Length: 144
Ligand code: 8DG
Ligand code: MG
Ligand code: MG
Image (cartoon, rainbow, N blue to C red; front, side, top):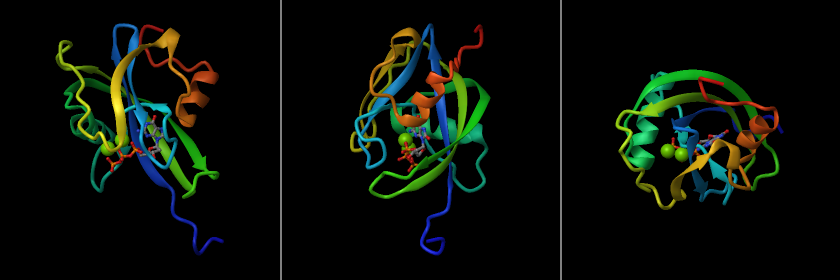
């Protein structure tokens, strides 16, 4: 019932673009366990979307980003999860500040590891919010 329902939260996630590929990690989480997802996390009090993305990329993968841009926002209700939750998910894109920099798995309790995946050969299964976007034909690349 409404009294017990948790409030929707804001998540910021990032398409980190490198050539024709994006950075994905396989989740270790009660929400979307084992699925491939973008780096990102919860918006903290007072942060801009860009600040949140930069912080999450540092915390999760040790990466510095630049040219961060807003892409879109989607509404994601996870009703069937053990702990149902609701996210308003803000999608940004960015580039690596240093194209030679390698992702590190700095939160191994939350992620099995980061890797680059060609946009035309994305892995399966994708985390549902990302899967939904891909199915609509969404493409995060600027020259698209
Ligand atoms: P934090 O404590 O670092 O803030 O959070 P986190 O541990 O990094 O949380 P997260 O699960 O990575 O991200 C928060 C929520 O964002 C996640 O539970 C659901 C939502 N979300 C989407 N799409 C994606 C996505 O592609 N990747 C990530 N990481 N989260 C996503 O709706
Ligand atoms: Mg995260
Ligand atoms: Mg995080």
